Length: 107
Image (cartoon, rainbow, N blue to C red; front, side, top):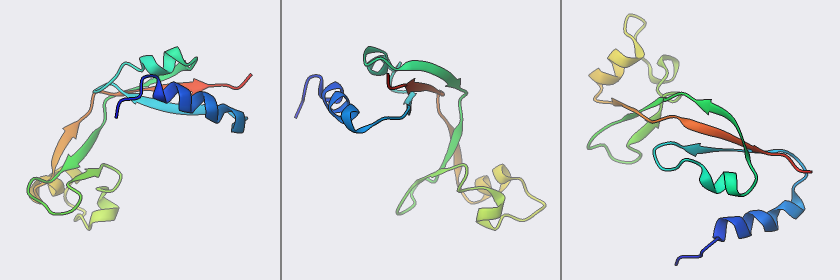
């Protein structure tokens, strides 16, 4: 289904139950955040490109956040870096294009 203006309709309806600042992010890989601009959100920051890990041919969740792959979470030996351990275990680093932080303050 395609609902023209669906996000703005849902957002405007939900405002009656919200009385605080709303924070959200747009991913530069997919969008410039125009939908947020149109709804009155204000650009409140740019977030630099970041990475996650991907394991080709694995079962279950193939993509993992860098936080879940920290040395303390994976059993990585102290003499190896996070990146060295991940490469040895066939996890490859994938970079995103950064994000934009948007805020909407209730009047």
